[in-house]
Image 1: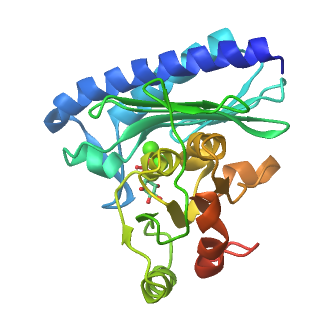
Image 2: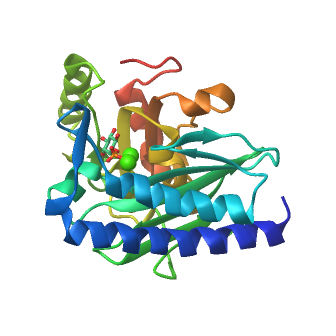
Length: 267
Ligand code: IPD
Ligand code: CA
Ligand code: CA
């Protein structure tokens, strides 16, 4: 991919994150009227807003870059031939969203043959736009951001878990973190917490089982902000869940050891 194409795709991703965010915000303000479906658990919800926002983004991507593949949470995988794959979550943090909380976002990431390449996360209520492109650094509302310096105790750790993970697995992770003296918090948008790692607001983020659309954009942000990530599987693995972990450089190794996500998924 040439730098020009990188720049064009990034420009479109920023525009679509904002337009998707505006549409999501419109539904958010009328959320009492939204028809909410429970996918399989009270924390696993979907509404018309999620589907419509993804449709808006996908339609524009398909029109401008018809040869790119697209993987989205609500409408799945469309194959492409360019070697470039968009990976997006129209609303990450659906539980906070549907409960009237401010921390949710539109997450548009992408990978190419060399790995994660582009990440845009927009949180409409907070009016915060995180942008990163491989080799070009990361920004928040246009200002450069950096992951924290220092070790795992240099800041708060973000934690995530969903109902697909065994309760004892989550309990073990929390026990070990607390025994190690790590201060942790949980908020219902993993994508946004990954962006907060890039912005130096959190020292790291860990979740035993997530999907590529939850982490791809955040991973680019963290890498470009000087942090480290546990690579997400490529190829057929891209559509399957896997452990997610990103942290500042000084916290990464210890966090990875404590979480013990290993090479094989553990849920
Ligand atoms: C969820 C959120 C949550 C995380 C879950 C994700 P959704 O995504 O990121 O924080 O713990 O694993 O599935 O359902 O809000 O798009
Ligand atoms: Ca998500
Ligand atoms: Ca979602």
